[in-house]
Image (cartoon, rainbow, N blue to C red):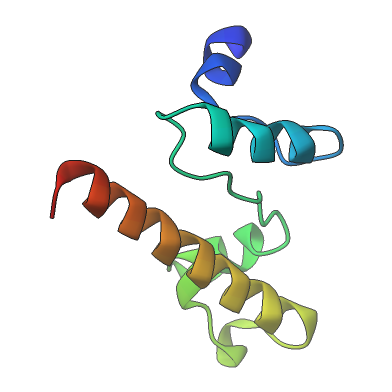
Length: 89
């Protein structure tokens, strides 16, 4: 399973995976994006019952978390744009 996932270009961005993810974006036409895991936002999103990219300061996204929310939004926005261009919209 792991080799199939890596073959499609969905590689972990932790550690050495960052370089492989960037390479996969350029070499693999089926790789739409390499997303960071945003592990610090997941508990906040689960507690607030909303997507990670929609967290607000009232949900606990303050300081560095607020920047991570903006980065997460931008990453998912770019991914959505890639999906739309891939399907011809």
